[in-house]
Image (cartoon, rainbow, N blue to C red):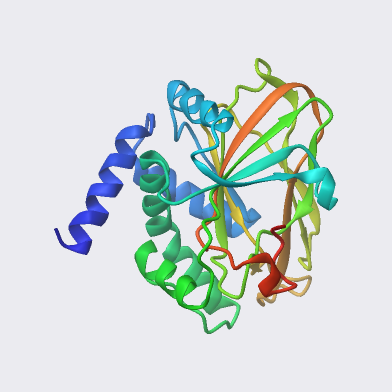
Length: 267
């Protein structure tokens, strides 16, 4: 099977898992517009409720994961998360590849607009080969668990020199039923309209968002359009009750924590 055929198969398998009521192309067109304007976009019902529950149940297992992080030990907030080990569960593998293919053109356009030389290949395997050649070999997809009183401080998921500028979080729990509070929050600095953004998600919804920075092309007071680099951070507000599980899909892999002081993942 050729690389193109394998990619099409992954996309088809992923789209069959998505419970979208309108065409995927229309959803992606809206998402790209939102990414350009706000640095984040919601993809509705990427996973069905049953799939969310099956994935959340993996958190109790150790064989799927390579490490567990207790956030309070590192001043990241409160709560905990686990990084998946390779090979990833099949659904996560399909999602990661299919979403990357959709997002790579956006990432490349953003870098051109910001005057950055880095461009990304069409397929995730080629980008991961670039990461691994640079020593970034540890998988970064993760699952986060928050309980009452837990939260995630504003941060950026960088992990090394090779960083894909977009990532995805999928809410596995049902707000108002499984938990209350725990809103996804983004902030931006360096734009003409600095602000915080609370992104409402339902169970199975995904939020695509900027990892580090995005281009801001909003016209200034004189009506002139110039590109600014806007710094983005994301986090989760305090969970008031219940338990909140989230799946995080990061497209670049990580170096060992001891290899670089810029890596945000504890050993």
